[in-house]
Image 1 (cartoon, one colour):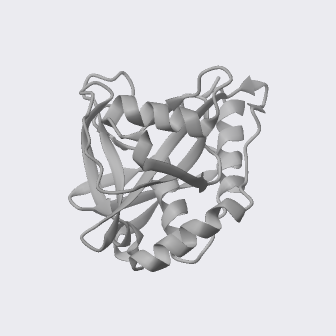
Image 2: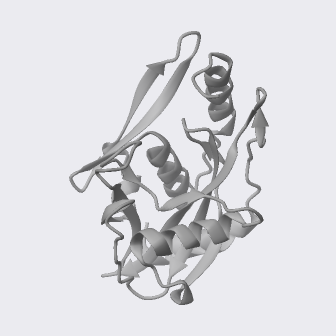
Length: 214
């Protein structure tokens, strides 16, 4: 994938019909949340910004993640994703344009997550907050899209098996929700369309039925 190919696919993203998860599942209300997939061009490549979560966070400390968080009342997913990215890694929204969105995902904390894709004009100057984000990890998109860096892990949830994605590149390991969303992005940019919401919904419903998400 070169820069022109990626930009062409990004131009098509607003027309893509995204799959969604219901705000309520199995009697459990899912809190609205959003994450930001921030892309930019540098050295003739397109890059994606990931973060390493702060070591003092209560959930998933030190994990590789995307900037994001819970939507405030009456806040759109795009506004929430941008606000959280400003707070966590100091992006300049004046140089950032929202391109579109990917399919809904969910977290074990009971969040319904909307992935927002945005383009940064020029190379971002990041400033981490040191609390939610300990550092920014910048990886070129073709490396994230390389099948050699992707493997699957089957997680047994009891009555069903759930396939978990694992990405290993640039010296980091990306797992779970973040890997799943990043792969949705790289598949789209590579000319394919990865439709994972039915499998995500099955896993979510099972965890709610068994009381692991409440």
